Image 1 (cartoon, rainbow over the protein chains, first blue to last red):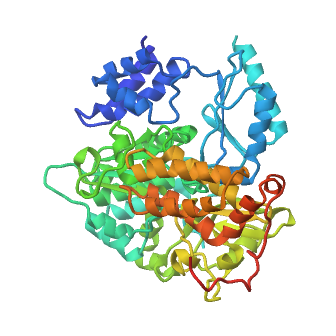
Image 2 (cartoon, rainbow over the protein chains, first blue to last red):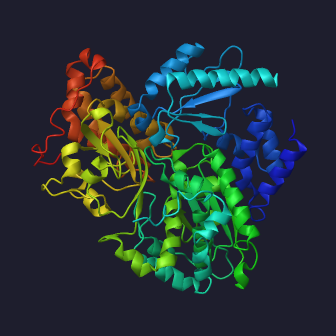
Image 3 (cartoon, chains in turn orange, blue):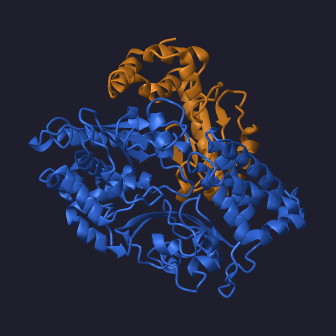
Amino acid sequence: MKFSEEKLNKAKEIIARYPDGKQKSALIPLLHLAQEEFGGWLDVPAMDYVAGLLNILPIEVYEVATFYSMFNLKPVGKYIFEVCRTGPCMLNGSDDIIEYIKEKLNIREGETTPDGLFTLKPAECLGACGYAPMMQLGKHFREHLTKEKVDAIIDECRRNAAINN
Amino acid sequence: MKLLLEHAHVEGIRYYDAYRKNGGYRAVEKAFKMTPDEIVEEVKKSGLRGRGGAGFPTGMKWSFLAKPEGIPRHLVCNADESEPGTFKDRYLMEFIPHLLIEGLIVSSFALGSNATYIYIRGEYAWIVDILEQAITEAKNNGWLGKNILNSGFDCEIYVQRGAGAYICGEETALIESLEGKRGNPRIKPPFPAIQGLWMRPTVVNNVETLAAVVPIMNIGGEAYSKIGVGRSTGTKLLSVCGNVKKPGIYEIDMTQSVEEFIFSDEYCGGIANGKKLKACIPGGSSVPILPANLLLKTAKGETRYMNYESLSDGGFATGSMMGSGGFIVFDEDQCVVRHTMTLARFYNHESCGQCSPCREGTGWMYKILKNIEYGKGKMSDIDLLWDIQRKIEGNTICPLGDAAAWPVAAAIRHFRDEFEWHVLNPEESQKRNFGLAHYADPIHVPTETA
């Protein structure tokens, strides 16, 4: 388990942002890199690898990885639908969107489709309240969701997955 | 009156050339002709108050910064915007990133921070790229890096991504997170101004606060202080969501009445789908919800305005707060019980777990609210909820406990009949909503406080 050359350089660049001896500050950015590099989630060897890079104890990595909701500690699908369900999104029908995704993909909250493509991860407020309902998909937000838009997003993901295979 | 969003719709304003052409980086030019103390004085004069939610005077916060010999100081920009209903900082960073960078350069110079960090919530992943691009442009044009404008002052700005934790918006939790730890708030004192990031003197300010330093420099602190009303000086960004015709970001000079803000076409454009206004949370999910009658007029029957003082008129009994400017509007078909339940779930999810009143209390509140919402509640649950929120408030290290308690308290205070209706009509409440009742009736202004 190792970073690619490119990721390793990025890691070094991040560590250089902090004063000497304060390299632990790079932990969260490095865990983001590790999650990207190692299949969308963090297993123990991945966390231990990051601990080694920062010269800190593995437990210091575990306690951080388990605290923040963006770090996945179990395998996830290729596409994670993080649908916001907090108040402002609820006022604009996020409950219906979540129900529709569950029905359409035949999974429950927190589950992954058997083909390994989709995970449904209900999220708390993501900061797009004026453009509700919404979900995060990868790096970007998908806003003003409707059932039709959800259909289109699912098709888009399936097409992209087929091209990448 | 627009100061922050004056050039928001200029094409290409996200990039350096258009930003500079529209008067960008003039504040930096001006600042470097002044001494750091003069800049702090200018910010003090402006009356600028922290735009993250607490509304603490920024100039005063800056003047608390300790300056021990030989120890570096840091400015940290709080871009962890996570309060439900709030998305104004996102707008600033996404569309006018140079405004923040410019504000950060001036503020870093004023405070003596050679390494300044922007801590941005992890979910705003694409905005990190936008900010880093803006930083590179600023650097290439000599506004950042070594010996800026031959002043002898060096400054670097770094963007740090969080990873999904509302609590990291609390300044000491943010500092812990920036140090690579769990976001557990610290016990104060010592305050960050004395011992903050890496135990060095640190100022943590919200994105909008730091962006506002730019117009303060450009027009002068005194001119800035004349905009607005009383101690609500300058302009404030409001992020509007919920059931209005035109949700989005608005910049106001705080002279508008709440009624004008909600119903005029210049702002929210009224309630969507021809419905009636039921309630509103005017300053982000943590502040008290108000029924329409108390929102538009104070308990004394006076017009309520969109500023710090007027929104909090009546205290928590009959008023609310300006907070972060997350303006959440409810139409007549919304269920206050359900909304409060989602907020309780949110705070339960986001509690860091250090203090037992918050860790346990938020979970209990969520469970009880879930029971009431799904027709399994008892009348005594309402009093139990009241009791739990009272035992959280004021009993925790950081304000998350209060933030979790207040929405529950206000919902019961103003909408108790809606909770009771859920308990008394377990089946019916699953099929229809309680509706408007008397909430929008301007005659029904409570005289007694809960």
